[in-house]
Image 1 (cartoon, rainbow, N blue to C red):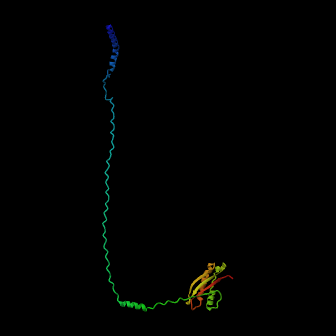
Image 2: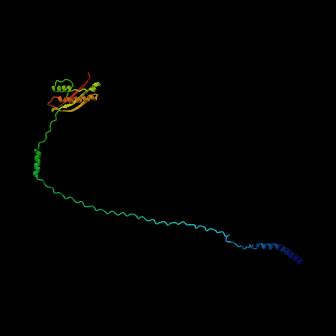
Image 3: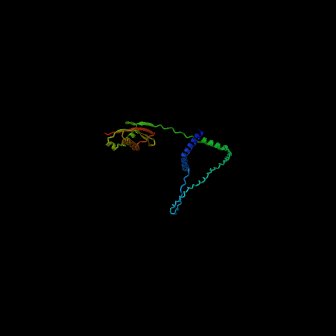
Length: 223
């Protein structure tokens, strides 16, 4: 019985090995390296394509930076101290003693010179001539003013009327001073005519022993 079992195992082994041998052989052939067939052919020079050489790339040249010159600071010279000059002390001047005789002469001269006497202020008397007066001096002044009374033609034509109060000083030396208008009229022509009348009449004023101040109205009226 053991022989029968052993013979069956050998038979089955043989059968299986016979079935797998072709697969094993095919697998070994598949695993072999495939060597390509190299054919030698002649290549002519015309078939060679000339590949142009690439142009050389110029690398930019970098200039080396120049060294910056260091600016040295300007050295300012130290000011030399100025020594103050010694101020010379003034020498005292000798005082000359004047002789006593000169002082006595000066005092005597001051004593002998007379002191200027102040003149007394002359009091001026004022006269107001408004109408007829019995004083012959004032009557002569009034008549001289009436004789030289000036009435401007333009004022008459424009029928300008008014009164002008005039004041003046008549000195004992027969000089006319301080002529002015105390009260003017509304018309400039009449005011100017009043001053001109007194100036012209002063040539006929009589002499007086004292300086007097006179006020007199000049009437400008068309009849």
